[in-house]
Image (cartoon, rainbow over all chains, first blue to last red; front, side, top):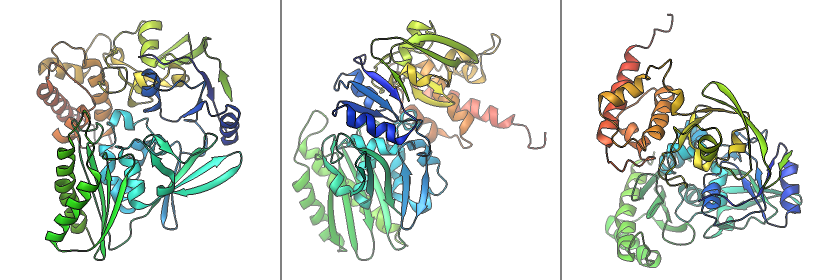
Length: 275
Length: 170
């Protein structure tokens, strides 16, 4: 349970980061908060030759309101975002989801961008990015490119981010009037990995539901607004489509019943907030 | 940019409980092991070493963090507080006294981490209630399962601290 040996670079400029990433042939790993990375190092699941510490990169601790989006820089911690005064108004889904992200003691160091880069299939922030269809701003020595959540998220602990690229910032779409937001999760202990996590956007037009914890990446489904009994059928179909995996944490049967019951509750919550 | 080579020791300096400490560390050494093994500050305990149990929790620049998920080199130039810094001049802090009053520790293994998390909560949050204390404690495992008394101690000391807070113009 001790990390393997690695070189450690402490960088103070964005270009130094991408130079190191490009030079190291994909063997370097970025450390922002380290709340997933250092656990993986301790368990020796990864053995990078170089760890690049970007935690004190200047000018990247921003949370900026822009046209239609909130842009969050790569050194912003999950606690920073939780304490941001504009959270409830601009990102009500994240306001609901953040208390479920790890524990306060890990949110104090863990970054928002880091969680997206880590891409754990049961993690809440990738689920919210997918539900809102936000974007990631990727940066490398080749320049900048922007990927939508569905282009970025490709599988378990895997993103479309190339080995020489970093996630410089994220863009979460701002709350839209007439849309209600809901979030719910079941885990063994508050803050543990989700067995099932659900994020919902609802309006008088329809429902967009994102389910995490059941497959390799967040799964999205959209339905027109429907009567209650049809909603139950739709959730049941979704449960059978997604929740068929069994592991040491939960049976497939349990996952399917969570999608049905938790799904119902979270859709109800989101509909109740439609302004 | 500062690059530290693997396998070599590099100078690490930080403020530990108000005193400057200065020792050498390899890049891969965890802050928990640096505190305990290099500095001999064994108050912080090591349980799971992957961020789950919370026994190693310390305050880094005021915020409660896992010292097993922090590299010693990351603490360079920062401010670290551990359980050893809570008591002043041999007098237990109000939080520690409340733990004693409420029998909030049994074997005591998880206690140093829990105290540091609660210390942050008491300093930073204006509204401390049973829900927020229990949510905070979800980041700690007490295998004596003594959570009830820990919650009572925390609420007791918060009531005490709020009651004695000086008026703004004092």
